[in-house]
Image (tube, rainbow, N blue to C red; front, side, top):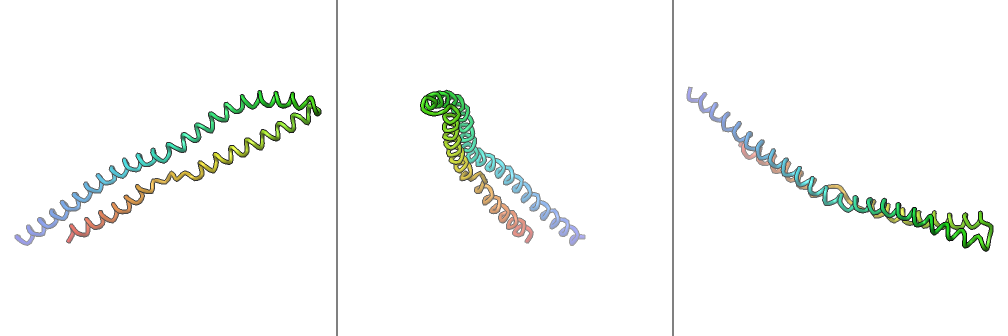
Length: 138
């Protein structure tokens, strides 16, 4: 009977150790989730600010460009046919807009929004949990 009690005690000890690892693992997962959230906020902030600036700049540019275009067309129309003045002004605006959008696109494309610290930390946590399980089951 005493060998049975020893086996039961051993099973309880193993279950207790596994439960401890599970609690520690759950706490690690919660910490990693908080870290991922913080890291994502840090990395997405610049992207959102750039996007907001692009939208605001685009709206203001539309209004300003309409007046500048009207003035340029009227000025050029004194030297050439109105259709040619409109074509020249519109082409210059399309070229300038394309350059600005390309520059903003490159800025957004160069941002790294992958939470690399969290990924590395999760890999370390996996190794730690595996080590805890194997060392406690010995």
